[in-house]
Length: 180
Image (tube, rainbow, N blue to C red; front, top):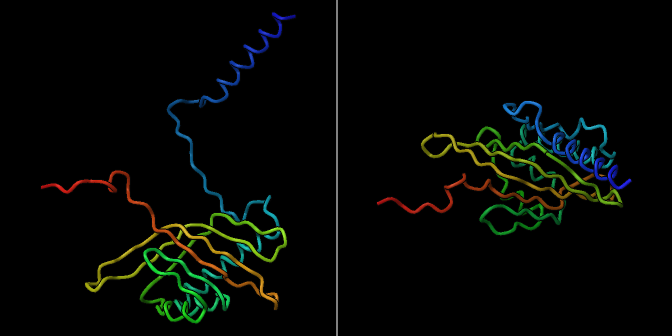
């Protein structure tokens, strides 16, 4: 009996190791990034947040900074790189004064979570901002974002907090010493 158990354990171990190895060692696994909205296992709350995020992005693409600010709750907070927190929709609107022909802010949600009460949740993903410098040269910034959504008393959803973090430096760019 003990021999059978050891044999079974050895076989299962060998099968487990083989299952972890790729069929063709030359093949590299593909990294797939499915669109979160098309995942059939998402809850209705998560789908609602991702739909809101898409509507928000489309409005900003067409309307620029003015459209951006309109999505914020009156008591919202905006946290951006190397800048002080901006508190309240009025102040956010004063800072978000770009025109879509001068600055294009785009983003793609990569996920979302809805709170248990279904009146607050968050989305996250990747953003990109495109503009031109004073010499007309393209300037591109990109990074990660998180948007916290809350349902207002009138049933509409608004942004409670929007935060971003620029992409980290490329590997090796962080700590190079200057060359003489």
